Image (cartoon, rainbow over all chains, first blue to last red):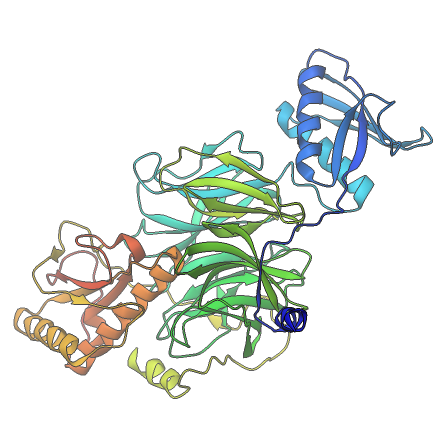
Length: 381
Length: 158
C-alpha cells in the first residue's frame, strides 16, 4: 500500500520531489601533459581547473592515467596558448592557437574547445555572470568570469539598477536603470562601454531577457495599462505585446527555440509560472507544486525550467521538468537561478553569496562572497 | 486616455490572453511610445511627504474604500494648488522584479483613482521603485507634487 501511494505521488503533476542526484554519473578523464613555455605552468593550472569545473570532464596528470585515451598537450608564453587535443590513437583532434591578451581568456577558450570536441556540448569556462550589488555604496551591475575571477563593475552612475541580462558572447548587457528618474531598460556594449536607453515608455520598463540567440528581448512594460509581457528587437523601435490581463505579468525568459516564453503572473493571487507563444495566445499554467514562483529561467536544453519557489521554510531553487510535470529542489535557502550555457550548471544567490551548482551531481561551489546585497545573477548564453 | 486600455483589459478578468498570432515579425508590430520629460521623484523640485501615502497588504493592489479616501484628498489638493503629481509605488516582496512590477501596478491603480476624481491623466506620472521606494519604503504608494513649470514638463492640455 505504501509503495502504491509513493508511486502515485511520483506521477502527480506538480508533485515536489526531494533532491535527486545522478549516482552513476562519471566524468570523462582527460590526460593533461605539462605545458611548456614561460606561462605554461599557470596555463595548465587554469585549463585543469576549467575541465574539472565542467562536470563532464576530469583532468588527470600525464598520459598514463588518462584511461579514456584523451590527452591535452600545450605550450604557453606571454599569455598565449598553443593547445592540442589527442584521441586514444594519438591522432590530433585539433591544434589551436589562442592569442587573446589575457592568459585567462586563452585558457578558458582552450578548455571550452576541449569540452565541445569530446562531448559535443557547450563549455562554460569563457562565459560570464552579471549580477547586482551595493558593494560600491550604490546599486550597480557587476560582471565576473564564471569561476568568480576578474570581477569588474560595469555601471557607476549611482542610480538604482536591477534585472541584468547578458547576450550570447557577453557582448551586450541589458539592465533596468532609474538614471532618468524612471525605470528604463538600458543596453550596454561591454566591449566599448557605450550604452543607450532601449525602452523608456511611460510606466516601468524592466525584467529584460535576451533570447538564446541574442536577437530579441522580452520584458515587462506598463504603458498600456498594467505590467504585461512584450517582445522587442534590439533597436527598441517596435514592440509586440504578448500578454493581456488585469494582473501583474513579469520576469519573462525565453525557450531555447525562441518561440515560447515562460513568465510569472499573479492573476491567481500569487505569482505562478505560465508558458506562452512569443506571438501571444492563451498561456498555459505550469503546476509546479509551489504557491509563490518567481525568477524563471528556461534550460538551454529545453527540458526544464529553474525558478525560485517560496514556502514557509523560505526560498529554494527548484527545477520543473516539462516532460513529467514534476519539481525537485536543487538548492535550499537559495533564489534567483540562472542557467549556464551548458544547460547543466545553475548560478543562484544563497546566504548572500553567489553559488554555482551542478544539477547532475549536486556539487556546489561558492564563487563570490563579500558583495553587499548581491542579487539577480544572469549567466551569458 | 490611459484609462481606456485599463478598462479594455479589465473585460478579460483574470484570463491572461494576448494578441493572436499574426505571423513572423521579428521587429514587433507596435511603435514604442516614449515617456514625456518629467522631473525625477527624488529631485529637489518635487515636494514629497506632503500627503498621506496609501498602504497595501500582501500582494494587494486594488484600492479599498479607505484607500480611495486618501486618494480623494490628494485629488482635492491637486485641484486647489494646480500642481501635477508623481505617483510612486513600492513593494516589500522578496522577489525584486515582482516588487518592481507590483509597485507599478499599485501606482497605476492610484492613478486610475485620481482620474476618477477628475484629475487629467497628463497631470499624473507613475514610477515604481520596487523594494527601494524612497522614504518609508515598504508596501506603499507615495505622492510627489510638482509645481507647474518645474522641470521640462509637457504643456497642459486641460
